[in-house]
Image (tube, rainbow, N blue to C red; front, side, top):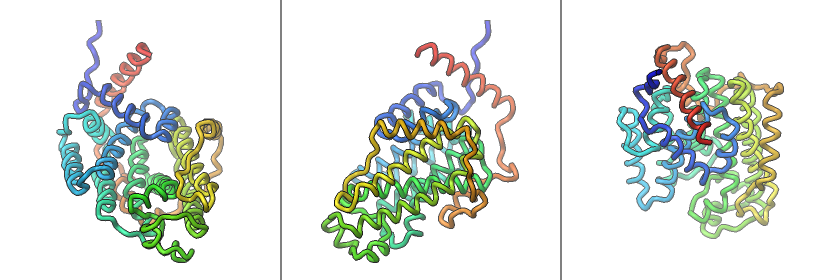
Length: 348
């Protein structure tokens, strides 16, 4: 009779339940991620769920809390405990701590994410596209970089393309949520662009109304997102083959949301853009079909956006300087992973 495989020392005994709690949170609140994650290999989907759940809870704590600054202070304390190896006794913190350890996520990445949330708490104003990109780098480029690390890619060029994808997705979020953000007193469109279109940003926030100028500004941001979605393709092509379908699906779904925001027209510019479920299914199917074909990607050697360069520098490990887990630790983890998957298949 074989003794049960031991868990890696960083993994809590409730790891299965912790991951399940993260997945449940995302299933109810992040439909696009949930749809894309279903075509990620399970070895990536599980840690990705922990990563996204931590980011989602952090965002919600700042976005919906009564005291944003107090919420940020608590999040910074939780993050410090994660990196000290003593996460708060709750599923999401334990799961994220295990992922941060196993995949060697530099602390600078989640810290930059919290900095982006701090900008929200400060009600920062964004005049130029570069300033919007700096915000997007923190709240979304960080996630792109961390996802690349989950897939064991630390090359600077791959990380730059992962950040491109994250920033593009945040541009899409901004285009989709203009009305909702304005109702909450927020504006992420470049204010200089709005003025060029004859829209006074402060007057718009005081009385949000759709207009042709607003619609053109949204369409301009979606075009910038499309440039970055195209630039991201070489990075996706460099990912492990079984990871490409899920990332291509996420890219395609978000890109379509941006196009839906443009199609809704000037008179509906404040309505939230949505992609119907049937259309989502078609998009995911198309991404799956494309994943095994040459992506025809160019621009993989383009320099990182200046606004994300600090993320690439933090995450890159071109010379293998970071300490990797021992061969024995990797072997134990792989055996444990297969045993967990086998138990789950028996239950399903």
